[in-house]
Image (cartoon, rainbow, N blue to C red; front, side, top):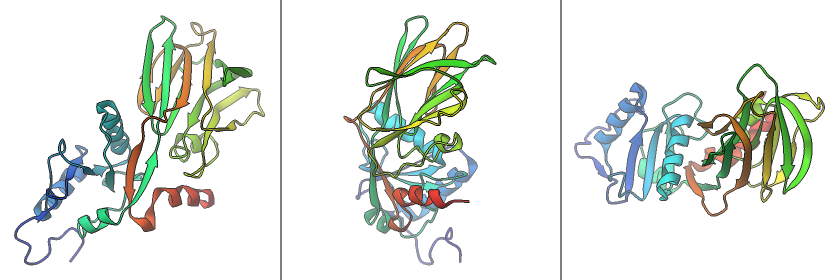
Length: 272
């Protein structure tokens, strides 16, 4: 018998509704098949009234779920199970012992970044980012960006494809691909990492205290257009982007203790 098979003699779903546990999933075939299996085994609460959520999908779906909760102003603890590709933010998929896994889960709290982006037309947009805020050139023209830290110009001109600010939770995502540092989840730090820097060539970025306010001013913004992206949300043709940690909001992810996010991030330093 495999982990997806219902147990012999299981005729009525176990009650997770009374525990306030709801279920949501991405719309992939794999995730929807997992939903069908779980609903044969368990009875779930409605998502709106649930106190804890089980999310089925990949990392992209987890980020989408967390963003939706931030926008609604009602973050709930989320226990993810991987029905996507990488699943770095997810637990392993198993149908059995779900209430016991949730009850014994390790809670990991993360605070999002706040991105305030002003366009060349003077429009202002504010979005949250759980992994990173990244600035990227829109054309073949190299971006030229001035970087200020706590109101002081730290780098007068960075010629590059882009630059990003990552949280510890996001330090193993785009930040790591751009050769940025891996930050332990408990570290009260942010990673400031250039993306394909041209000048200065030897600047590899900085590790900053998480109470730091970082401001990017786009030089020659009309001729060298740059977009700003908060996780998956893009603002094009920006002139100025301010990034800081949003200490007033936090999100809670639930993990099996033997496979929790903080240990996964730490072990990424030894990945080959």
